[in-house]
Amino acid sequence: MKVLFVTSEAHPLVKTGGLGDVAGALPAALIAEGLDVRVIMPGYPAAMERAEGRTDGPDLGDPLGFGRTRLIAARMPDGVPLWLVDCPALFDRPGGPYNDAGRADWPDNHRRFATLSWAAAYLGKVGDGRAWLPAVVHANDWQAGLAPVYLKQWRGPGPGSLITIHNILFQGRFPRTILEEVGLSPELFRIDGIEFHGQASFLKGGLQFADRVNTVSPTYAREIQTPEMGAGLDGLLRHRKAHLSGILNGADYEIWDPSRNPNLIRNYGVDGAVEGKAACKRDLQMRMDLDPKAEAPLFGVVSRMSDQKGLDLVLAVADRLIAAGGQLVVLGSGDPAEETAYMALAEARKGSVAVQVGYDEPLAHRIQAASDALLVPSRFEPCGLTQLYAMRFGTLPVVRRTGGLADTVIDVREPHGTGILFDTASVVGLWSALERTFALYADRDAWRAALRRAMQQDFGWTRAARAYRDLYRKTIETAT
Ligand code: ADP
Image (cartoon, rainbow, N blue to C red; front, top):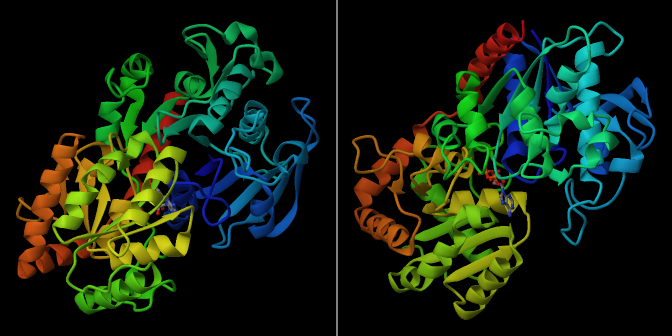
């Protein structure tokens, strides 16, 4: 089965969050299951630089009037075949994949991701000129949302289309006037088209026109059908219920495994975990100017800073956490006010709180290894990956019972518990979970037993890849 996987980021070429991890791992897992998968993503400078074996692919001319565009055939470092959309006018610039160095969205994002979607739809419809024609175009998030729209607008037979929602809050909304600019009929600006509260929404277009829709955990698939968590799209999702499902993401243990991890001072597996983690904790305490206390429970955070992630709650309990003898290490970036508040906390609580603002992949691994518990108090969480990594690293996740967090962590009150869950996104809710964490930590045998169980969980990508294979089959059935 030939599948075109459309994404705006993929680790290790370009990553800003969970989608990058998924796009960096799922295609390889699908290939291992015998599928013929190719990835298409924008030719950002970092992607062009890091992709291997680049050769010229189809020349698309100037499809939408934004500049000369060609496809470059290449490979991910792990061998997964890749197409880079090479349109220098849109993608050859310094800064992030979605925003400039000052964090402002690129003003031409509608053009940039319409072009990605258009190129994917073109490959889906016409193929690469060398007999590679996908049976399914798998769009991810709003940046690929117009691919199913183009496919349905263009005449003649085409592939099945699937869109995966990695976070329903990101919808790609633009003024209605952009429709014609991106080569779509203004007639699509209607409630059962891509109109959303007076704007054109790329995500809504995808949800409306894709043959199938899915998201990254079964619980989130249910939650987004409710007015509280559907971000205005719950009605449409309820309407599409028969074609909506949830598949839990996996963890890439080639990358996220403490037993073979180049970022750690000491590697460890299940058996040497207590000693290994102690060495990693000492190392991190030294590197980040935390008091060298072996016995202080160390709480880690590795996260984007946004309202979604609930890190305001961590700020609010920090004093109590320290008073109870804990330490806190935070790696994150995003909301400027939150960044400032965390830096101020670190300044005021030297020795007990360490904060690094920014994006730092090796440090993310070190925090996972050194911490005793990882805090993920999200208000909503489509799947969440850091709690999966934490478990493999023997770090107990303390998570809110929502979305994929609820689907992956078992509370230690249960016989096979792997972490601590709490229900309400409030200071009281989080603090009660932390009290239970401190109590468990004090019971060394119980803690070590939970740590062992957490490390033995298997959230590898094979299960998810098989579920996607089945979903691709259904997508083809729905399309025909
Ligand atoms: P989301 O996609 O909502 O950001 P996920 O938990 O699905 O959340 O994925 C987050 C990914 O990004 C993980 O791989 C995590 O380690 C990584 N990450 C988040 N913030 C940072 C940071 N500041 N530095 C390094 N890695 C980070």
